[in-house]
Image (cartoon, rainbow, N blue to C red; front, top):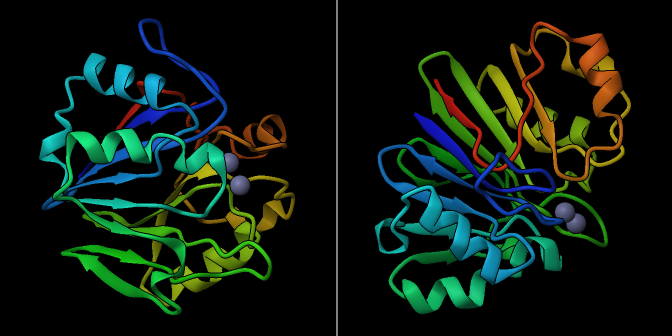
Length: 200
Ligand SMILES: [Zn+2]
Ligand SMILES: [Zn+2]
């Protein structure tokens, strides 16, 4: 199982950064999770990372904020066969593709879904902005099995005890307390930006 961060507020050399998030999940099939804020930057980074848009089987949108939906329209022009799963598609955990579940929409005003991906070491939870509260996303994800890692935007999450026992912690995008999380979990912390690759 491999994840490539395609879009983030920070980027490795050769890639464009922008406020937003997107990553490619390579499980049995390829899934694009979120599309960043700028279609131009998204398409540019996909090219630089040698990701063929037409190879993607599904696009999952975490929630309807511009920094996650911005590239969707242009991406769909390059691949109109990919199934698109919007945040309101599911109200409870559902398997979208083999080994990949949506948590279902969580939260009040802002409905947001996260992904739970099976890996050999346990489940990897991938979040967009974590508006429903990362602790709530973690709680829902635990219904699907043990959590190995959590990657994505953690927003204002500060209940750091909740991450106890999780072996890979990759806060990025809108995470407000990245530095504090790094200090609390230095061994588990992974610095994530566009171009980062996680293989489990
Ligand atoms: Zn966001
Ligand atoms: Zn948001």
